[in-house]
Amino acid sequence: MAGNILHKTLRNIFAAAIIFFLISGLSYNLYAQESSDSGFFNGISKYLKKGTPLFSLEYTVNKSFTDYTSSSTVSGGWRGMGKYIIPVSDRFYYGLGLYFGSGSLSGADFALQTDPRGYPGQFVTPIYYFGMGLEFSYKVNSNIFPYIFLSMSNLFFQPEDIYGNPLPNNAKGSQIYSTRTYEPGIELGGRYFITDKIAVNTSLTYYFFPNDYLDDLKKGAYKDKYASVNLGITFAPSFSGGTFYDSDNDGVEDKNDMCPGTPKGVEVDEFGCPLDTDHDGVPDYLDKCGNTPAGAKVGSDGCPIDSDHDGVPDYLDKCENTLPGLKVDSTGCPIDSDRDGVPDYLDKCPNTPAGTTVDQTGCPAKAGTKEQKETKEIPKKEEPKTTENPRIIPPKEISSIVLYMDTYFDAGKDKLLPKAYTILDILVNTIKAYPDSKWLIHGYTDSTGAAQRNLEISKKAARTVADYLVSKGVNAAQLEVAGYGENNPVFSNDFPDGRALNRRVEIKYVQNK
Image (cartoon, rainbow, N blue to C red; front, side):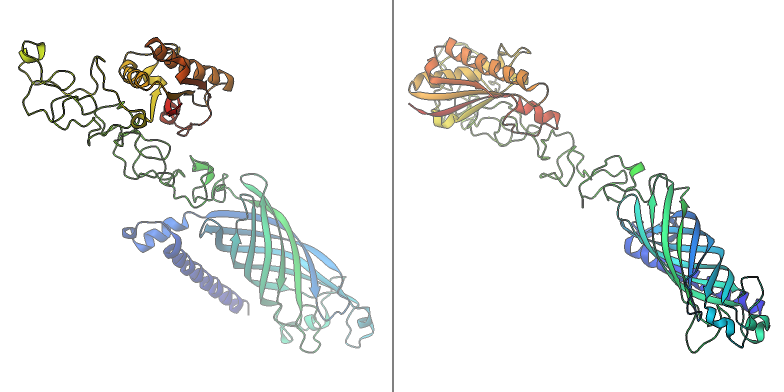
C-alpha cells in the first residue's frame, strides 16, 4: 500500500510540474519581452528567471466537520511552504508551491459514549501531510499581495481517543479503511511585506476530505472535511525591494528604476525612463516633434527652438535675431529678391539689375563712391552694420519685438549690447514716424530665484530699453514700461533652453492714440 501511495504521489507531482511549465510557456508567449530569434526554450528560461522564491513558516488553527455532531473544538499545528512566484504582467503573478506540515483534528459528541460500537465522546486525529499546488496572486500595491492557492495533499491520519488509543475501526487496520489518502484543497490568503524581504501572511484553507473516516465514524453519505486558519512569516531572499516593487507600474522594478514616478501607460526603456527616440532630451510622450536632428536645441515640447520666431528653427537659421514680421527664406535670412546683398525690407531700390553695384540702401552706387571702386561681390549680411537712413516699417508689420536678456543685455541688465542697436534704431525710426502710436515695453524672467528679485530684474531690463529709445528722440509718452518677473512664461522653466527664452523684454505695438 505504501508503495502505491508513493507512486501516486510522484505521478501527481510530475503532472503538476508539466502543467506549471505549460502555463509558463503560454505566459511567455503572451507577455514576455524576449527577442523572437532567441529560441522558445531559451526565452522560457529567461522568463522563469524573473521569478522570486518564497519560504514560509506558519502556525495553523484547525476546525473539523465530521460525524461528531458537536465538533466545535479546534486544534493547532504548523506548516512549512516554499513557492516560486513569476510575474505574468505588472499586476498578476503565478507559481508553484510545495509544502508539508502536521497537527491534529478534534471533535466531540458525548451522545456517542453510549453507542454500542464503543465510540468515545471525544476524538483526536493526529495528521501529517505534504503536497503541492498552484498559486495565482495579484499586486494591490508594493506591499499587499492577495492570492488563491489550489492544492493537492497526501494526508496521513490516525483517529484516536483523547488517551491516544485507536478508535474502533482504526484498530481493525486497513481492512476497514486506509489512513493515507489524497486531499484536494483551496486557499484564500494574502501577504503583506513589512520590509523588502520579510512579509506576514495569513490565509484560510478548506480541505475536501475524500472519505468518511477522519473521525473513524461512518454515518450515511456525509464526507468528513476540515478547514484551517494559517498565520505565518514569509521570507523572500531575492526580493530586495524589487521583483514585486514597481511603484509606478512601468514594468521596471524600483531598485533598477532610474526614473521613478513615470506616468501610467508611458513606454519606458530598460532603466524605467520614458523613451526618447530622437535623443533630444524630451521623452516621446511629451515630444510634439519626433525625429529631431541630433544636436538641435529643442523646447519643452520637443520642437526645435526658433528664437527669432521667423519660422526657421535655430539649427537651420543662418540669420539669427531676424526682426519680427520679416519674410525669410529657407535659411532664415531676410528675403533679397534682386540678390543685390541688401534685404528687401532695407532695399529702397528693389529689382536692381543683376551685377549692379549698390550702396547700403540697395540703390545703384554713385560714380566715385567706395562701392563703385570695389570689384568683389558684396557679401550678404544679416543686418547692416550701420543704421543710417533705416527703412521705416509700419507698426502693424512690426507687431512685436523680443529682446532676450542673455543675447542683448549685459549681466546687470542696465546696459544694452551693441547687437541690440540695429533692431532698436529701426524701431526708433518707426516710432518717430508714427507719433500717435502706442508701445508696450514689458520685461520677464524665468522662475529661478526669489520672485521679488525677478520682478526687479524684469523692470530694470524694460527700463533700459525704454531709456535707449528716449535717448534717440522717442517721445516717452508713447511708451508704457512694466516688469512682470517670472509671470507669463512662454516656455517651460524645467529646461535650461526654456528658461533662457523666458528671460526677455517684449516690445509690442498697441494702437494709435
